[in-house]
Image 1 (cartoon, helix red, strand yellow):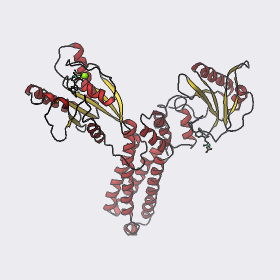
Image 2 (cartoon, helix red, strand yellow; image 1 turned 90 degrees about the horizontal axis):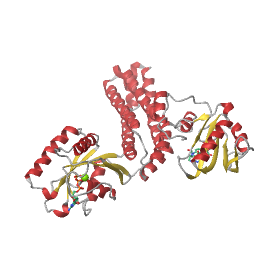
Image 3 (tube, protein in one colour; image 1 turned 60 degrees about the horizontal axis):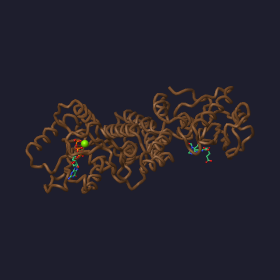
Image 4 (cartoon, helix red, strand yellow; image 1 turned 90 degrees about the vertical axis):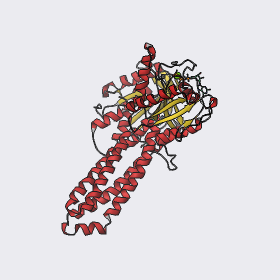
Length: 458
Ligand SMILES: Nc1nc2c(c(=O)[nH]1)N(C=O)[C@@H](CNc1ccc(C(=O)N[C@@H](CCC(=O)O)C(=O)O)cc1)CN2
Ligand SMILES: Nc1nc2c(ncn2[C@@H]2O[C@H](COP(=O)(O)OP(=O)(O)OP(=O)(O)O)[C@@H](O)[C@H]2O)c(=O)[nH]1
Ligand SMILES: [Mg+2]
């Protein structure tokens, strides 16, 4: 549970550590007492004033800019005071402590993570999808992810959800009205083209779901695990994809023991690439642990790159090892997870590979571009011409539930008059699922989960 949403809160709003400027923010019903004590003079609304921030004994803690955002015209919708000081951790701690002291009479306390944004949500400055976009913008790991988070924050995702909701409400009103005139209901629905309205709703939903899926991909990325026999060049491939010498490469089979991972991006899609120990029977206790870890990584992969050494193609013992590994992989990898065969060391061999397999050289970089394209394809990325907005798994689940209810609704419509109340109920459930996305409902537990994952002071 989140703490009470009415007491005044304060926090350091800028990242921990040293910076040119650091900000302490206070939000509550009135921040006047803190202004009087710390700034020592009246502040003009929404105007930066340079002044000394005073300790209780009048000595300056720092000189900086103070801004008062009188309620409701602030980030949180409450009365907000912002103190922009020099960005040292000790200065900011002193300043925060001074604000808490000055606000003791009104029980000013340190904010929980996400609490400023939670208030913005509670005071209707942002809806839930926008509030989540604030965190996603801060956490974005690529430019494309940041741009799409910014679009969600500006309300583009919410607007499309709103359009779906409007169309749904229109249809619901029609169905509810029909329920009151049982004798003519079917005719009535036919004339109003209920079927056509449902079709259009499903089309709109499919388009939103497509874009949201792309957005979720930009947010989460996918985990790609490189696996294979020792010495195939797994570590070399990780290094080539990352463009840095991250993992140790030697001609000795069994070099890698620890899991080495790096997030790279392809067209803005984050890919978490994981290099693992070569898979083989081993008596070496250290290598055995490495191999166990490799299997654990493989089990959690979104895609597996099964790496082979092309210079050993045709070598019966080697190919036998690969065949056995492929079987083991099938036991560890869920069916939906793609396993892509990649043949490495193409610079040192002439053999060709089968359709659907990738031939490359980690050493020269030949074929890497084709691998990147295949990885994007495996991730399900479609370079979307229209603006993608950031979305979360939570949103996708809600949209899929809407889809399920609409499919039920179509079935009930075909069943005719007996099923009209069931049709009405499915439409109501579909609307509830949509409302969960923008937070037009009150489920405290869900809100707690969402806001508690924010950083402090946000
Ligand atoms: N210094 C500073 N920079 C910041 C923030 C902040 O809190 N402080 N923000 C915090 O995350 C973001 C900006 N978000 C903000 C959102 C709304 C308002 C605001 O004053 N809204 C009023 C007036 C709107 C208007 O004039 O159009 C309102 O909504 O009524 C301020 C900041 C990023 N940069
Ligand atoms: N000619 C050629 N040699 C390569 C290529 N990629 C890797 N090698 C060589 O193959 C050997 C093994 O490379 P690694 O990247 O350490 O192989 P690995 O699969 O990580 O090996 P383990 O960690 O032992 O499982 C090294 O001597 C590399 O220089 C390539 O594309 N071409
Ligand atoms: Mg290695």
